[in-house]
Amino acid sequence: MKLGFSTVMYENSGLSHQQIVEKAAFLGYQGIELNFKEWPTDFKVDSIKNSSQEYGIEVAAIGTRHLYITHNLYLTSPKPKVKRKSFEYLTECMKIADKLNCNVIQAGWAFQGSILETSYNDAWKIAVNSLKDVSNLCRRYNKTFVVEFACKQNAQLLNTLDDTLRMLDEVGEDNVFVMIDIYHVHQENYPLRKCVHKANKKLAYVHLANNERLPPGKGIINFREFIDALKEIHYNGYLIMEYEARSEIDKSLKDALNFIMKLL
Image (cartoon, rainbow, N blue to C red; front, side, top):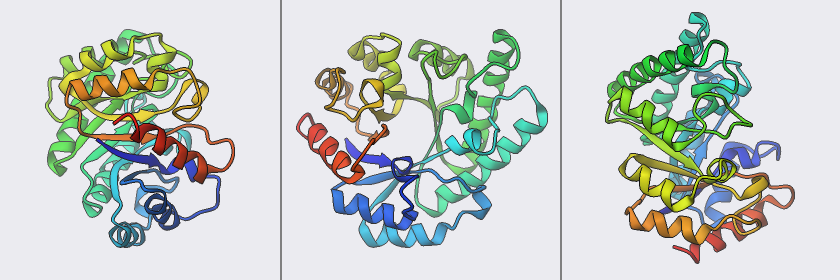
């Protein structure tokens, strides 16, 4: 397993993406999840490509959170214009991923939004069809798409692993996977080991945070159980830190890294 962190951790720090890549190398991480507020065609890809090569830091995934929280768009919207613009955004993210030798596109709110704008059954049907379209787009660019479920406080369509696996079964494509954010698993009171084993080979990406969005090692979640379960299914993908660093981001990320490293 490899360790990385989401660039969201430094979004309010004033650091450039190049400086964040340098931080990753300095702190001992292997990769970053790249998130950006700009529309993808306005994002300066070459600068981060150069810095990632210079410091030996991988782009583990392209994060898409700002599709929703900045641009107010999401892939499963019942509004045709919103859905069309969302797919334009996603297509440009695929192109960025190509330039950065990145194979994974990650989506939580960017996929399902945070509220339902139609009935649950209609939203489900739209989501299944949208995910089939995403799969076709991924096939064109040779990428993997990972869907993040979220607890009921944060979303209304995919709240659990079971919801997400049921949808993936309906979609029936081999380039669409589930990701686990351990925070959301905990919020839904889903047993950690059971969650990992049930996901098994459909698990392609992981976010790490403790309860109340604390850093790993600072709350009550049993990370030993979680990491051991990942070992049992031979998971070898990225573990990405994404939590609320309330002070001293560098120290917090270093402490979280050391905590998880002892469990690997």
